[in-house]
Amino acid sequence: MSTRPLSLRRAVSLVGHRAMVLAFTIFAVFPFYWMVITTFKRNSDLYVAATNTAHNPLIFNEAPTLDHLRTLFGQTLYLTWLVNTFLVGVIVVAITLALTVPAAYSLDRLTGRWGERLGIGIFLT
Image 1 (cartoon, rainbow, N blue to C red):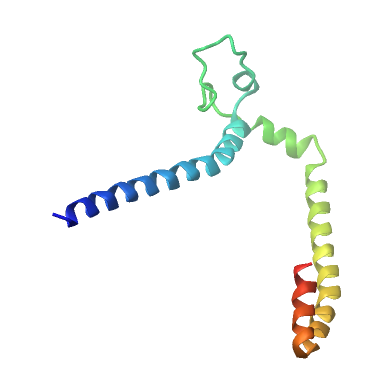
Image 2: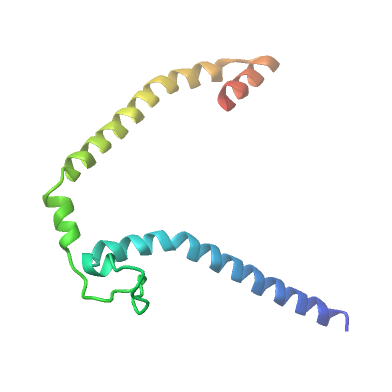
């Protein structure tokens, strides 16, 4: 008789855990879903006023379109900005590696009780 409440408690705990994981997963995935929906929605479907209660903003109420992507890639400097961002990222990583590898080597060479603590303190700082 003592095993039955334990299994019921375990089942309730498992269901609660799964519900929590599902809730956090939906919370984490929703921005990506919204990004995809708004990318392919028509402007007339996106900017419907709050007066139309029959409109559901989470689905396609009109046929999807590629107009927003054409505008983004054809009428803006998005590709230039993307290449610039990539180059800045690569340069930052290269500078960081060039400066930190010698510093890590010198910190690794520190010996003794104070050397290890100093290295950890510098790393944490």
